[in-house]
Structure formats: C-alpha cells, structure tokens
Image 1 (cartoon, rainbow, N blue to C red):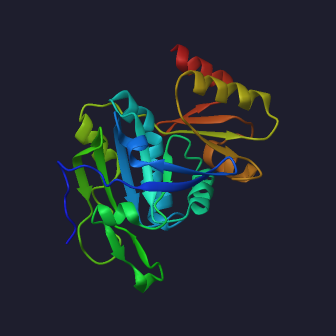
Image 2 (cartoon, rainbow, N blue to C red):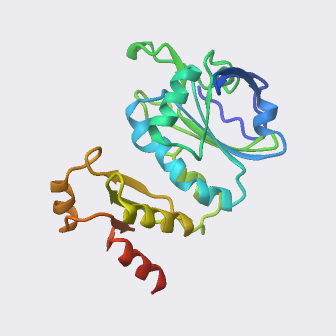
Image 3 (tube, rainbow, N blue to C red):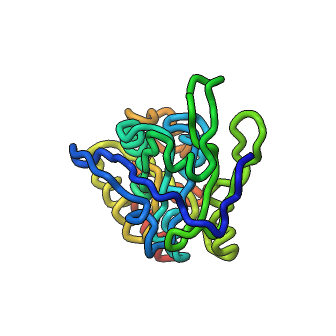
Length: 243
C-alpha cells in the first residue's frame, strides 16, 4: 500500500551526485530546509512518459511555479547520477534539479520504492509529486496503485492548480531557426527579453525546409508560433509585442 505522508518530514538521506567532474554529496536538509520545494518522482530517466510529458511540463511551468512561491523544483528517480545528468541535458531541463536516488534510500523512506522486475527495472520509485515546506510534506499527489505506470495526478498542472488555481500559465512558444541566422538570434533574444521560454526547431537538425513550408507556408527563418498562432518572422515578432 502506498502511504500518503502529508504532515510528516521528508526522509533524512544523502544523495551522491557527479557535478563538474567531481563527486558531491547533497543532503535532504540542503535540498529542503528553509525552502518551498516541489518534488516529482518517476520510474526512470529516458522512459516514455517521463521524457515526453512529466519532466518537460514541470520544466515549462517552472517560472510560473516560482512566481507562486516555489523556490526549487526537484525531479527524483532511482537512477545513477550519470544517467540523470545525461537525461537532464537531453531534455534541456535547465529549470529542474535532477536528483539521483541511486540506492533508492529516499524512495524507500517515503514508502514509494516498488518492484518493477517484470520490466527488468528492479526496484524503482512509484510516480508521485509533493509540495514540501521547510522539510515538511504539505501535499502529496500519488498515482493510483494499479498495474502499469499510471500518470493522472502527479503532473505539473495539478501541482500548480493546488498552489494557485488562478495562476496564469505560459503560452507554448516554438521558433523555427537555422544555424548562423542573425534574424533568428534577434527573435530568440526578444523572446528571452520578454520572459518567454521557447522550443527551438532547427532546420537541418530537427526539421527540413519542406517541414517549414508545410507548417508555415514560408521558406524563411525565423518563424515564430505563440499559443498556437503563427506570428511570423523577427519583424512580425517585434510588431506582435508592440500591438
């Protein structure tokens, strides 16, 4: 039975991390003491739901969560530090602290260490999220204890709605670019200046010219989309923010 531990303190453990080519130990006190922290735990780095939805949405909503009183957002998995570091880099999850619970000590202390031998995973964390204030667990969203890997309540939107149901969520932004394009650099700088996070789709790496024409009807870059609306190039983007 997965236990809801609201009102209790987080387990006291040390995590072993590899940062800047050095081994480091980080305690739960360092992560949680005197802070408001959102932690979400998942079965494994590079796995489908974790990579396509769970971590990316927390990364996307990180700014909004922090505007509503959250100091840090922590992603935890029973993986080693090298795997977690590689996954964070692959996901470009610069807004998230990835923590390797390599031995499963924290997950066991939370009562969330489960057996996934049927998948060849061994022991892993159950999927859940929690709001922790000064080391005390205020709220937990635990996925239902059913077979498989349910993903219904531990998502970023549910957590944000709990913290502030009236919070304004950022609109999704995508930018088609190509290497060496000064106008692309100008558009990206403007989006950053306006505090907007964006997905960059680079021609030759992520998409082709055919893809660009099919989606935008144009063959020049940059091409910017905000909230599902095609804004256009860098000059169009400037006009968008003026209007």
